[in-house]
Image 1 (cartoon, rainbow, N blue to C red):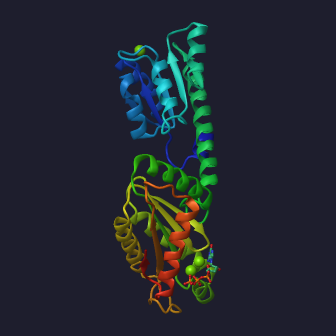
Image 2 (cartoon, rainbow, N blue to C red):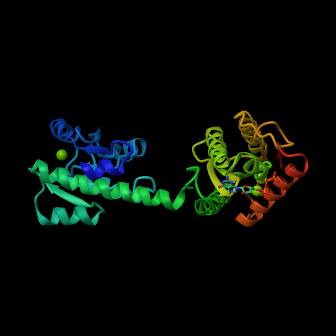
Length: 305
Ligand code: GH3
Ligand code: MG
Ligand code: MG
Ligand code: MG
């Protein structure tokens, strides 16, 4: 299991789906030394269980009591939040056409029962490794290397996606733009390494404050951060902005050169769209940026909208 452990900073998770408890037990015993194993016995519950447990691989039986495994796999592949989880069929159905159907509906492999344990484990390990590599590449493409929050590329993509969704669902969306106050002076006084540490802590405070599952936190550039808040009114966004502003100040990171506070602080600009009209990402960003500029001009360490 050397390759797997080299890639994962946690034990990989496997979801086993089989209607026969004895089969589930056998697979569980086989996998348990290397993986966290989750189980489901009904085809209809697989997507829900997969969304909840986020497995790195699904071992799927074909003959189940309710819907068959092919249908389960098709559903998994059709759902945005489960389509990237590799599926391996594991079945006593031994015809070539069974295997062909399994691969056609999106499985990465097909293990015929009865199987050789060592071979099955190796195939499983191969696909787990590929999945973890894909996760790693996706993170590299979407996350900021210093702080671990989303990067500008991911932000641009999400803002435009959320704006479309907000117009379709006629729900208001809000955007926060945050900028660390007098950060150039902070770097000059405490050094760039302290500056980097400060940005990490500020981003953690941001993530901790924006708790709704779809809130999206990104490093927009340098010492600027952005939060996209779907289904959030402008008054809700102003409240959250104030929570964030105060939680950054309460990190109590000393800033001897700031005239806004004795601690590191942020200024926040809030903008919201009118979901009945088309709002472009550019126009919303401009509104948030103008609000941020007012917060800076009014003395920093404050929220403006
Ligand atoms: P204001 O209150 O008006 O925002 O003043 P400011 O000094 O924060 O603004 P300015 O844009 O003049 O300076 C931003 C500073 O942020 C300058 C730059 O060196 C620093 N910075 C940007 N990215 C990083 C980073 O990744 N690490 C560190 N340590 N500093 C950074
Ligand atoms: Mg079965
Ligand atoms: Mg700035
Ligand atoms: Mg700044």
